[in-house]
Length: 110
Length: 111
Image (cartoon, rainbow over all chains, first blue to last red):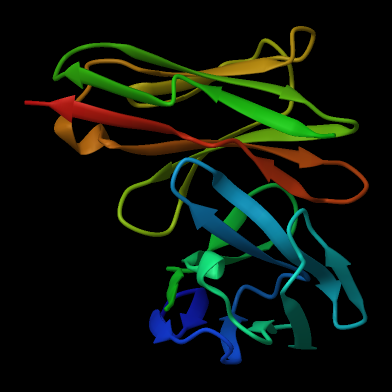
């Protein structure tokens, strides 16, 4: 089993719909991150969390919200999806140094 | 504003060539610099550098950090088609533990 698991792996939705991307990890790390990747723009940080009571905004948090349900679970929500949120989303975990990534969730908003 | 800049954005070489990928950064509180390789989906870890002037090496790949001039390079010698990927550079910030990524360098190695 993967150390960092994201669901769904692929999702197509319509403008205005609410979408949740889920992430769970078995590495026991406190830090969890959500990034989005767009062609030519690299990985941009949406939100990050150090524990269930510590949530921080990243560079591009507008239009997104997160929930840290437990140390091992960190979900990303789009309350009302719009087409420019079409992207590849990555969850990552870390303790000191290296980040470990999930396989990504490809979201398409029509 | 913290930023990480990679160059070139893309590169096409032939098998056997040597390539050098560049990563420069301007950040408030540097802790470490990391290199990742991204093929199909998830980035995979290559190196983490914290000290200036010390080369990290793994097979045909090597990397070095210059903390005075604020950059790092990733060298790949005797390239193979399997080296084709996006190479990402990231800087970890101390205090906040945020990771700022560059835009990546897309490397294509032709047979």
